[in-house]
Length: 135
Image (cartoon, rainbow, N blue to C red; front, side):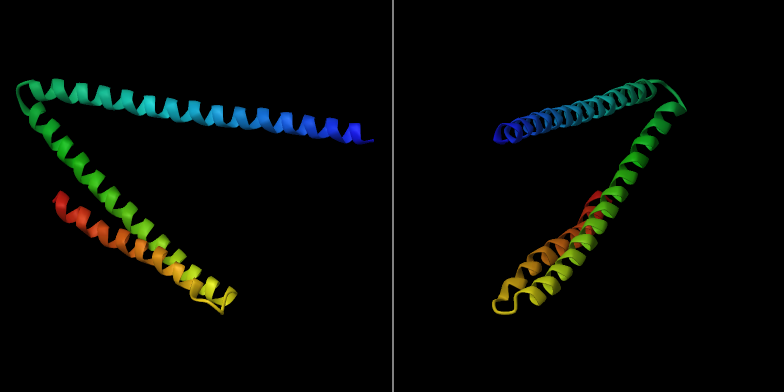
């Protein structure tokens, strides 16, 4: 009877090992191919902008305007991302304060939520610093 359970345990362990190796291999290949795609897109875009900027006429001015617009859009996206991250971390910090205060009343463990709340406030405030530096 013990031999049957041992074989099931070995089979389960083997299956889990193979499944985890396959999962992490797939994740690695996916991340690599995505970064490779972004690298190719960036290379071809920069090559095209370089050729347009080197040409004579209105193409050079439009290429520079495109670069400025992309930088502005990137700054806006960074600002929005920092604001969202700050709000989410602030909400998590407040929730953690309330949860730990309700769970542990003897010791001030709930103050750990203040750390998360302060990180959220710093990210939210940092979104305004990023904007003023880019402009």
